[in-house]
Amino acid sequence: MKKNSIAYSLVFMLILSGLLIFVLAFLNKITKPIVDFNSEIELKSKILYIFNVPVDSQEPEKINQAFSDRVEEKDYKGTKYYVLKEAGEEKAYAVPFTGPGLWGTISGYIGVDKDFTKVLGVDFTEQSETPGLGGRISELPYKEQYRDIDISDSEENEFIINKPAPGGNIDAIAGATQTSNFVTDMINKDLKAFIEEGGAK
Image (cartoon, rainbow, N blue to C red; front, side, top):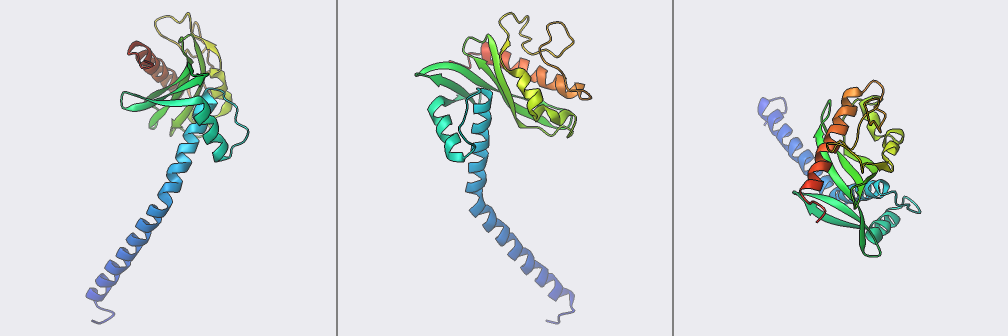
């Protein structure tokens, strides 16, 4: 087969493509456990943050230990929610929420005490909002607003309300009103469903 022929070029490309696919598949196989482990640790770290559970360091072993000591995972509508326990008693829940954002899906967990009278914290597991605008929902200044919000007197299950609306308890992100509204809407909807459907039972 001549090197300058079409057949030679085709065979060469097929062999090269096959080799590259094999290498990529091999790399994916050997790195998948590491990627999965890192994703698991990241989620556990977020759940601990929501519950405001202090961890001595950000070493994976420390995060794993703190999570195992205080948090239990349970099933809810095909997904997971998390229970904070103290002395064997349930103290709080990290409830999943998800919905459409401006540019894609936004997902996360909202922390609430066992009596559903106080929001404890929030964190996001997925979002693709505009960096510097809607993407700021993942930054501490926004998330820290969700600490210890009294929802015992919430009307019509509007737990989280953007200011300056009546009863507002969260400052919307400047220049990202739509994203801010998407977040509060999905949190209120999914937290209401969790409470009404007995997700904590």
